[in-house]
Length: 259
Length: 347
Ligand SMILES: Nc1ncnc2c1ncn2[C@@H]1O[C@H](COP(=O)(O)OP(=O)(O)OP(=O)(O)O)[C@@H](O)[C@H]1O
Ligand SMILES: [Mg+2]
Image (cartoon, rainbow over all chains, first blue to last red; front, side):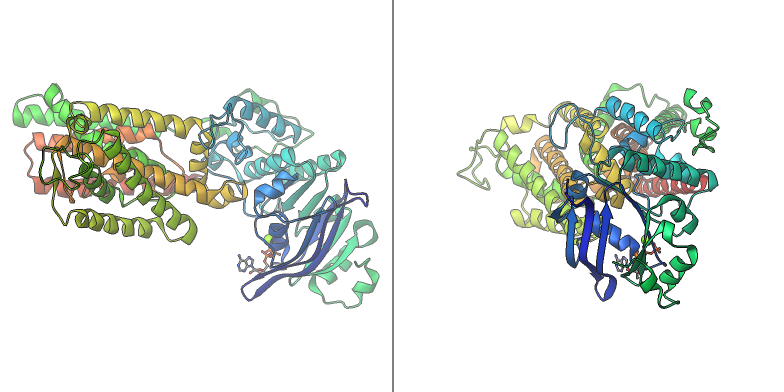
């Protein structure tokens, strides 16, 4: 554990896609046990930021510190190995596989190690998937059904249960409720509250300000690839957040506890 | 079923519209099996009408069907795995030709004066077999590496290999056939040995696809490649492995054919890639990836064999046979497209 209580910190994190400056010079910090939101308009660079800190992509420039040490994630496995789990914006589930296979995708339980030809311990994966879904309060009638036969809400719950059950240090959700109905959204929000109780830090990307104010401690605002500011949820209001998102009302920066 | 009734009002249940999830679709394997029985019965009836004899109850004919199916079936086992990843392999027929030539050139008897390698005759059978399999492995590896790292479509990469391997097969002996294998090499393809090889390979990869991490990742890649990637699967390495296996199995088929015919020619295996793909698709392997099984492909191979020998039995001219075969391949793919469409609209 880092003595300063900082779980994740980025310094000057930058990502260019050719000429597109998707993320520029992002300085971000996340404290232990803290739940924060990232908000911003479409194309503000939120998902880009998520991809850099989860090893899906490698940043053009900048540093990432995790648990007090500088890290470079060459692949999603590296990020996962240190305890970071993510729910990506476009659902990262394999449609033709069932629920346990999806939850354990890329880290299957096996009987003995024969490299890629290791035999799967389906029973153990099934049992542990049941437990993971129970813990997060998700009810799915038949785990052996392919993901393709499930509703958007169920799929999202599977993705979130997967992340929640493996995350030990940090969980990141990119618009987890974007496509969900009222009931399913409540379900996901309950899962997030459960993570707060367990003390697992969370980064939530969301466009839903009501949800953001209900769930998180701090709000990080992204605008056109840059971090426009950080606001404490209980010391600000919707108007201030919106003006920071759009950049319309100047002078907000002085009021915000800007880092 | 019990889980569904446990509904806790305090916490809204995410899963509401799932009752129909319990109604399981009939599996593709069962559909294919019903198709196989149906087609066999049609030929049986046509047999009594036009030939005045039974189509099915003729052990000689049955063993010919099984033998015909076995060799291309070995290729189809590899192609099935490639198709499940969402890819395609058009090079297998040419790999058959190339490996047949190369393997045979190391399997010749010393008493034959014009051997390809006069100093390398009468070698133990493992040597030509291993050399042949290595050639297939190399070709498959190149396919996989091209597809994984340059991101060119599998169709293009394997089309290139199809042309290149066929060219190499012709260049190898400047178009001359290679013959006169040792007795031990000739034994590989005799009698029912090819069928045993086919069934053993099918069983092996049935287990690998269904019960191992290899299989899980093969389906995952075909199902959603980016999901596989962010889940930490090394997609590149896995694709290379799958295409390499397909290359090795095509090579095995080449060795069996050369051995069975006691000769190797550069033109061997022409169109086998399409027959293998047809077997897989008829057996329910989806060209869009993620779905299919070895059991399905084995049934698909049987259907393919029954149709071909059924036409021969009815004395249908070879020209018609080829045309109908083409129509069957297209029909199988059309059926697959409709299955996909039904699936996506049913969601
Ligand atoms: N792979 C890529 N190649 C090129 N440009 C990209 C790529 N990914 C993102 N971009 C661009 O980078 C910018 C930031 O995109 P990003 O997906 O991070 O936005 P976002 O804040 O997540 O938006 P949304 O709220 O719509 O999800 C956009 O202009 C986008 O077009
Ligand atoms: Mg986004």
